[in-house]
Length: 286
Image (cartoon, rainbow, N blue to C red; front, side, top):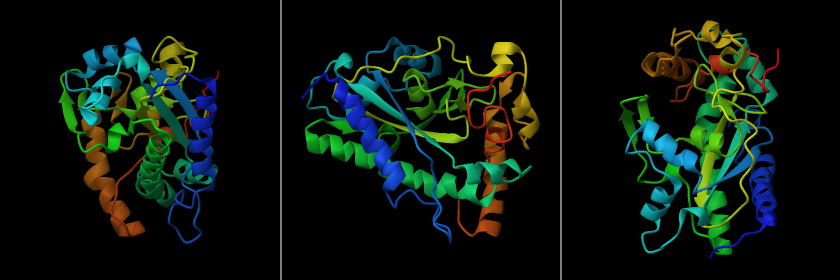
């Protein structure tokens, strides 16, 4: 079933925002049952957007275009790339979670660690909810990041990678650009997580207010800032960019052991480069 209707964009945005703002799933699972995420942003991009092919060429042969993962998920269907839409969202951390992590210098705050673990559970439930809602309405849909086909990979050009990137989908969908630390800077800032699904439906793409993948980063656009370099406890960020291996080695075992010992659950996180920086909660300005 394929439909082109601008009202679909509003309908989908309401589905996503209502889930985040009203569902009991949106919780840090702490004693006060604080919310994991604040009000989200939603964007759309066409499965035929040439940026998806460009990203595949840059990351590696294993990286999925929207049409490839859709076809793998629904091999009985024959669809065209311009008949599918990537629905992407940004889940901003709450003010309280950002404030707590802003004070840290080595390890994540408890609320930040909870958002990484329990908040990602919320994100997965949101993915499932949007997929199910679309399918109940007659639109086939898949969430690439929780597909059993999703895999971690190694890219010759990018190092640690995977078959689908939520941040790249958000970038194509007009929701933000990349910073020096590889985080996505959005109108709600860099302190966030993102998600996406791909559906057999035509929704008008969100206009990208940028034409450079680093447009919102002051280091790249103005030669200023670099505060994320100072915030990184692992020395994984320099003026040359983000060292994924150093970053991962800090996450596990270092932060994983801290979270287990101090907060009582098994996870890892950091996020110091996402807080205490000019792009924490907005697109930075001079």
